[in-house]
Image (cartoon, rainbow, N blue to C red; front, side, top):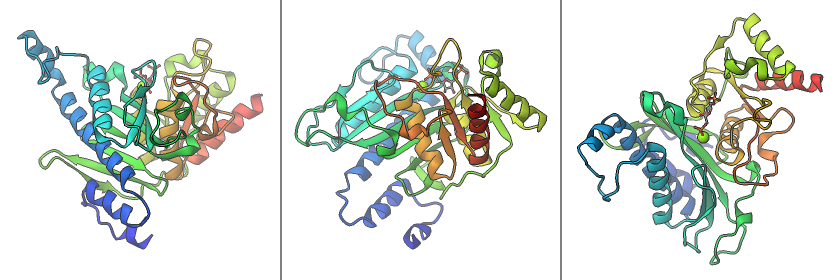
Length: 332
Ligand code: AHM
Ligand code: MG
């Protein structure tokens, strides 16, 4: 604990990861390396995003990227970059991605870890200069090391995550992650190409003043959800909804608030994906003192049955999540 507190704001992500590894003398360093691979992929995607406005212009002149590929949509580019970085790193034996139907066997049979990613979340915001993000979860494989990865390796509950986090590409870019010992945020400093510790030991306020949901669906929500939203309005809370989960989540975690994506008749399980979006953020918020539920169950305890399954999500400051959960329970 003391060791952790000794790490000053301004230390690089690499150094931070190394120092943490030293605290676990038996750790092999593979998780540390994997986190560094993810940070590298984040930097690459950050670069692509910053050039996004120009890529069509460049494309119009017939340009191709370095690999000789034609210009592709940014979420596809992010998926390719990310999976490539993880494959090259060697610690990961399998990947599931929101962008891919089936799992990816990286061929690294010695890799201990599997990763679930949403390489670029908030796709509707890509073309309009609004913040977007990458979300990741890391699990230990279940099948024996040295053998090909199996589908069952991926179907683990959120409580089994070894680490999770996100990279938010915004007015500045920030990588936030947890390995189960609190949450730390590292802002990207482009001039030196490093993530720097800027938000040590993040704690979310117990109660908040922000509620975030797609209010256009108000009449599609259950009565109890509408009651909660009405209550937020009576209390004159602030409505904030970017439509980019990572950005909405990050703001609410720092300032205090709740993000909700309830079920609707059209999407009876909500829209968000348990394996790529909900579990990763649930681990982060719990480590920051918050809560995440689907209305009945703790998100991280949901038993997954499919890679792409969805879950309603209520996540944020504990008092707010408890309050909506109570209203939903009462209505049942
Ligand atoms: P995506 O994975 O297709 O980008 O969808 C996920 C996004 C979240 O970032 C965001 O919170 C949500 O969809 C917004 O959905 P809606 O437009 O229905 O409000
Ligand atoms: Mg997504």
